[in-house]
Length: 156
Image (cartoon, rainbow, N blue to C red; front, side, top):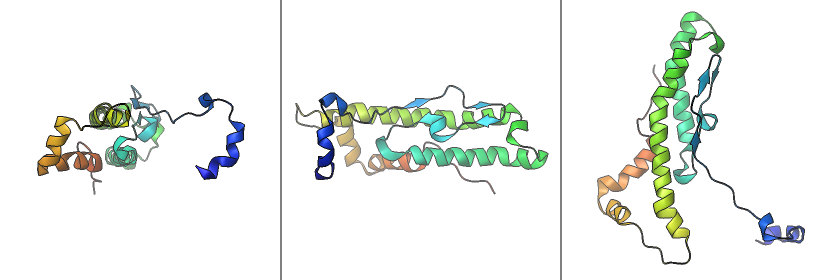
């Protein structure tokens, strides 16, 4: 890349050049009294499908739906809320997060990794070829990425 040519003289070995590490993980517990983790703080999403921001926003919507009434009713702060409300957020968001992370891992292992392996010509997996031929199935991954496993909506 020409824009980085002036920096090449600083590299002495190839091990100084590395790719961004990619991970997908979840905290076992997203809450404690006075603390609630959401988005990347609670669950790091793989970049596959670009769903990280979607899931962070969905987490925030669930937080608003679960905590708004108790906070208004008691006129308290997060630190004064019962932990059960915080646990409810993780219960509602935990399974959808695990499902999408498993979906991302399968795409990474079965489609992206083989496509990036330059030693063999790429042939899409049979399941992917089937998905692309059936309209309902072809649209399913995009809907899953865009709206999540269980779409959430802000309560009025």
